[in-house]
Image (cartoon, one colour):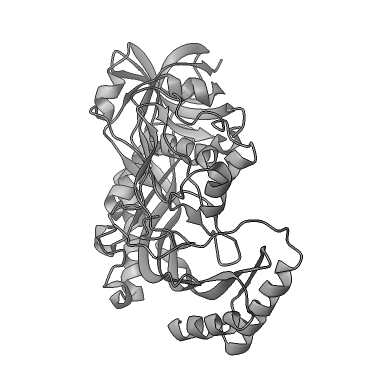
Length: 442
């Protein structure tokens, strides 16, 4: 790939453009799905491609190709130059050479040595562990293993260049528990940079217990009550809310935090970091996708909005410094502001201690409709399932209930942050206790 990039740079420079960058990727991956103790599906993937950004007469041109032959690259460059002619003039900047602070490996050196038989074995083990957890687990809808290895290459006209390789392994399971005519679904997921850290038993037990503990669940009467959002649920909520932290959304007025930089937006017990230097994060990287060295930075610190996450363009327009958050969803996309790893800082109490904190509390273990949170107003209405506790004792599982309100109220109402951090993709969160919310049921 280095030779391909070198040739591409030579062709671009012959065009006499002002600035340019070349972003390239190549990778492989495997997924295995097991059902009823048999392999249901095996899928392999190969990715390779290259993207060109160039500035001609103050106009940005962009093109990409999956054909990295000499002709494929040449055509992409010509398309980028043509596309520049129809774009609006603007001020574009490209990154200068920098040094990354990331000092741990992103790649499992054993990746290429893991045989397909081992991948099938761990997927089957995941299903078997779930079925043996409880006689109430009647079906495993899907037990899956997947892995990926990818290398990113970058070069620009300021002679800023780098490459790095990452690996990722993951397990996921979806199952059903049944008892006395009641049926509940359970799900869990684990991802890791290193194969040896995968724990199929833990994933199976977590999914199994989440389904079994909700058997017999029903709505209770509507009440105003303290609510604990379990770690995975709050991770989903933060993931949905993350769009409000992004510079491009602030620029377009599509963020409920657009005028709140430096102001209190949450309870003082809440701190959230964007942390690309976290060993366990799926989004860890030494540089963002436009060549800016990444760094850990507070988004919310003790309730105060400290930073927006910006790429070079939105940083310039907002009068901010780039934060190393220029992210491309694929080679077909221009870099825009995005998250690396969002980490909610842990507190001191474990989940059992959180449950005992208020007189009564609903522990939300599953939420439906989090993606419907309005990113501009913060209004939400989500369906929930969970457990109702009084004096720290489990009273009854609940389902078919709704929590509605505003994200601002929710964030300001957090009184305790737990110690039970869990990763969900590139978001890590503990459970959190909210002082009071209206939970609608019967």
